[in-house]
Amino acid sequence: MLLLENTAGTKNSIGADLDDIASVMDGVGWDNRVRLCFDTCHAFAAGYELRSRSGLLETLKAVDQTVGLSRLELVHLNDSKGDLNSRLDRHEHVGLGRIGEGGFRGILGEKLIRSRPMVLETPIDRVRDDYGNLGRVREIAKRSGLGYRTQPRR
Image 1 (tube, one colour):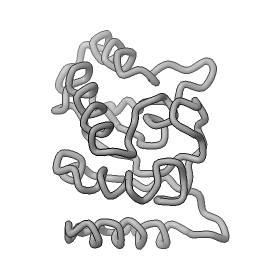
Image 2 (cartoon, rainbow, N blue to C red):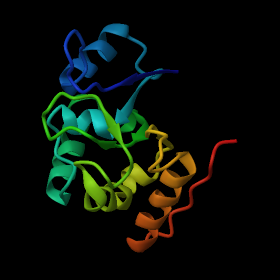
Image 3 (cartoon, rainbow, N blue to C red):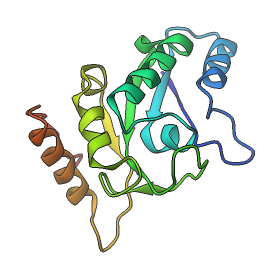
Image 4 (cartoon, rainbow, N blue to C red):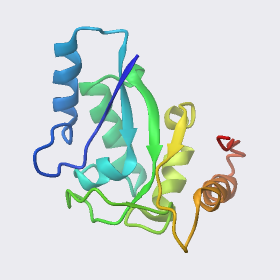
């Protein structure tokens, strides 16, 4: 299987627009073997609103109309240092960036996303390490009443 990841739209890149991802997928011609890795930071930086329920649903509708929700295989779960549509590809700790904790409550509360594997792609620094971010995801999910089970990679 080949996973194509959406981009933030920085210079010399394609894939910030989901139509671009769909075009590449169609061009490859392996319908059942090419899927989407949806990066939350990249999507937000490319202009897809993830902070509100309505914005998240619009984004998922866009995924469905371009790539197809059945091809959403994996989620890179990370916040964004840049603003909406900033085209800045800078990941932030979950809940501390521009998407914020409220946005992640919505993202983690969405059944379609929750049913997919997720990978944290967050910084490791004095604020938090990978386990700190994993713990934060668990707290947000728990406070959302999801009882979400997360497992660290070893």
